[in-house]
Image (cartoon, rainbow, N blue to C red):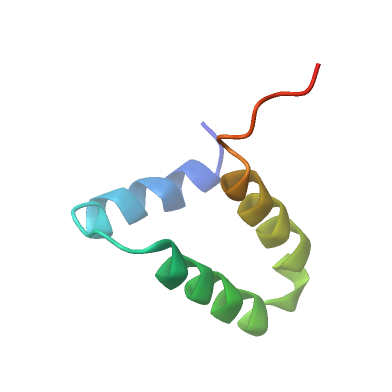
Length: 59
């Protein structure tokens, strides 16, 4: 188990029944980076990965 799994599990337990829009999530990510600029690169990578999930693999 990765350390981040704890946070993911807490998110599921506390807010797992909620439905949110991607616009809402994007705004929360922006707020997080504003408060924690050292996480700009990982948040950018996560957002890009989520945005491209349905893209066909090259090759």
